[in-house]
Length: 401
Image 1 (tube, one colour):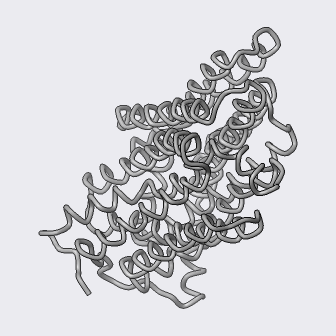
Image 2 (cartoon, rainbow, N blue to C red):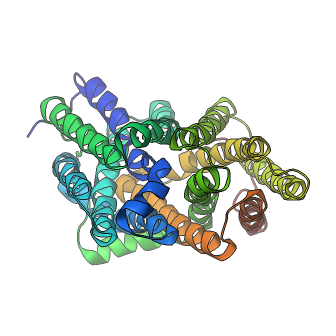
Image 3 (tube, rainbow, N blue to C red):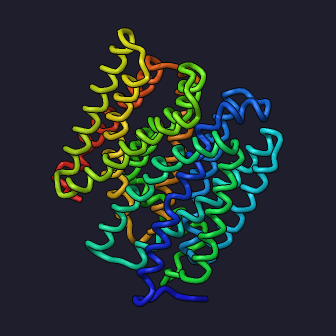
């Protein structure tokens, strides 16, 4: 089996960055097609939203054990097999005529994408050290955020010109191309096998989860990203059913949201050396104020441009907050790169899936007022976590990351 060396780690790193957005594409590209899928498959809105929730839950749960598997068996083979099977699941969805089969395939995709993502995130911890490791890991969430920008934008055009199944043809093609490139140019990066014995794995998990900054940080990531998922679940129906826009215009709305997240992440990198806790506190405070003003204004103005202006600012702040803490958590336990990455991402996605589906279902989001209420709830929860971190003394000393 090919091993990544100093000579070919550049091309392997480039391929890893090319693969990182695949989880976001798998989640977001078909967003503008929600209403058409509901009609074509004879399903209601909640069932179509469930296809995203099932993916998130499977993705989150899988990462809780995927990390230990790739730490023991290696990154490369798991990634290759998962890419191939992901291509097959998309072909099955393309030929599906019932929502039940789509839900099953989405659950399988969550597992496969988790293995792909874990193998590629661990590559940077395996190959780099010190400032370079921090540099590349901080770039991960920024590269990943390209998917929420591009995916719904492309999905809107796929839906308008070819129908909802074209989204899954795109995913199948993406997986096929990356499979071939990985097969030819990439290789294994694991140098020392981690433990696979259940007791040792559980001890490692226990060690990491007893650290308050780690566990509370996972919850913070999950709640902050729930803002984006709630928006993604609601915007196709708000745009296409309430305001009577097209799927293409839904894609533009999602594009604006994704760009806001991207610039939030870039801003966090610019402020990389600033005090860690103060960045968290400022971001959460601004989230709450913006969500509160958005709710107040909903009674005075109900226009899509007003709503999107608030969404852009909120998602900018969310992208900033997410990247700050994601970078911190991803480098928190380098001795358990795969497992810590799995717990970080998997735990966050579980929090995201539960919070987003519960809040979206409870509020029945269909306008600016109910959307702002969801942001307000989440910003209050995030504020509570920041206060817990403050009073626990975890960040009593300034921590520049």
